[in-house]
Image 1 (cartoon, one colour):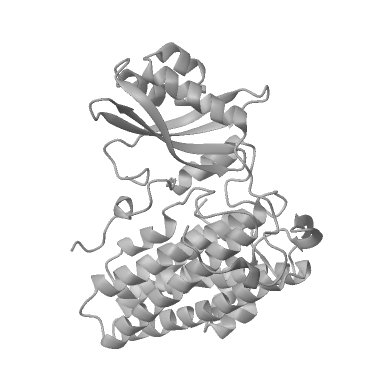
Image 2 (cartoon, rainbow over the protein chains, first blue to last red):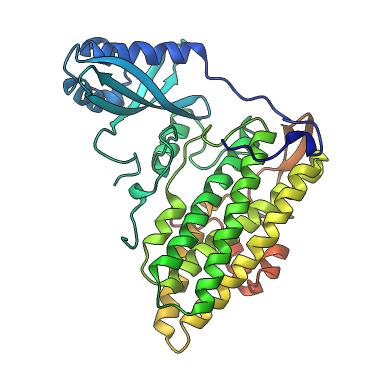
Length: 129
Length: 266
């Protein structure tokens, strides 16, 4: 974000609310989910997936050759209440890469599951119709 | 350069999360929330409302710029008005980015949807100004007027004054929209009818399932905003006074009020 001015010059106490930090359990679940995809561990990835997202996750997992992608990078995340949309880049040593966007949310028992997933590799954004 | 560029060609930083509005609704429904925007009783209400407006200001800036570019044969004064609007919306974007910072949020904390930009897919400048300037900026008058009242209850001059400055511009944008919808359709009742129908669609889309009320009829709900617990409107209200200033007629405002509860959009 660009510097939009000197905060000290503005009236009132600032900021008036704290920034909400992503839960560490959610971040750990994302790492685990992406690691499973990279390892080609489709069964485990699906075990972390809600019933409604099984088809897209299975499709994405099927298109990822095991062991090719060595690094994961979280490009961005945005939340809707307690659920997070996460955009992640998986990259390999020869320049291969896939960009995925998925939504992850907590269940009653505290387990985080993937609720939807989309492969953004060949599209500009999830707005693509 | 291509005209009428589709939503998926709109550039955003790589770390921004863009999702169609339907996906945001699904995410909310999945959590047992209402499918629309965050409601006043939700913890994130002020942050998400300011975030939605900020993203809208960016898209409004881009949309006015595209309208200027897409219709090179439109009257020169129309182009000047659109250029002025780009400038206004860019200032609004900065103001709302600062307000997000102020309430402990940041641009990108929540996903951005494609709704406003979708209005630029229509190839008639009269429809564009009807939908964006009269429909969406009319809605902005409602949202801003309500935010100003909330800020007054919070005794928060930062939000109150910042939003008031922006509201003054939005009123001008609606007036601009009314002027150009009339001028561009002069002697062509069919074109005027289409522009009005386009605006009606926008009004219906943002009727929030009939959840809007008059200011006087709005139920009150307790909410912690900043360091205070205040009573605020439980629903989005219609800002009659601001809309009259913006050039909406009493009849149009009445139609909006009567339209509440019979939206075909949801």
